[in-house]
Image 1 (cartoon, rainbow, N blue to C red):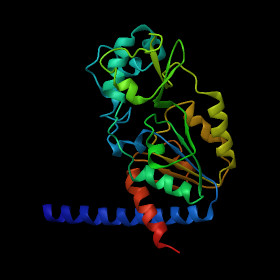
Image 2 (cartoon, rainbow, N blue to C red):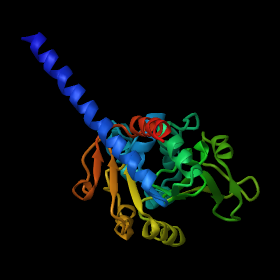
Image 3 (spheres, rainbow, N blue to C red):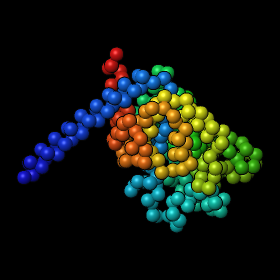
Image 4 (cartoon, rainbow, N blue to C red):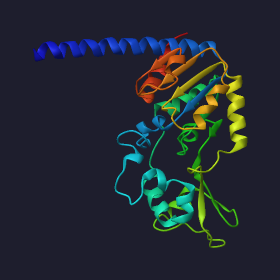
Length: 268
């Protein structure tokens, strides 16, 4: 009986792999037909680089060993009221300086260099898209690589912040607290950035959405600006946009994008 079940499982996996391969081939065809692709991504794009997401069972918000809920600790109110506890959480849970771009980041940079991808719109703050070589990246929630003194507005990179990770980072020039240019809960998104994202989506002829549950607003709401024919979803779990998608690929995005570039390189 166990042998039969194992064989059935193997057969099901083989069928699934074939289905995914066919969808990736179809995605490659859509990319070849497109000239202005926009990629909209979330935390799932970076999980395969060792950066945890927020809402999964093992995500940042699941951590219970802090005196406050994790979601509270990344709010603007908490930052101003308890900067010491905010920074302890921030440096231990949200900063991954050793993380490197994975196949998904590199594939998107490749598509941009090939003249196919016009913009990456990301909810991530890790800077891995730029590290992979992408040029036109719209970081809706800011970046850990940009930090400013709240008094004199002097700029500091991530290395300067990490040098003070054992306490509240203070500006060497004026002694005031430094704040990361990341959008905390309770803060508004940058309006100019939103307008750039809306313009890119409005002009796109293919939208690829990857590594996001589409549960974070107002970021996810920007996708209504897309007026093109095809939407491709690449996400481990089902999303609210699946029913509108030309393709919905429920596999790890780095794996899918690696196979996609391989497929594109083989086809004439």
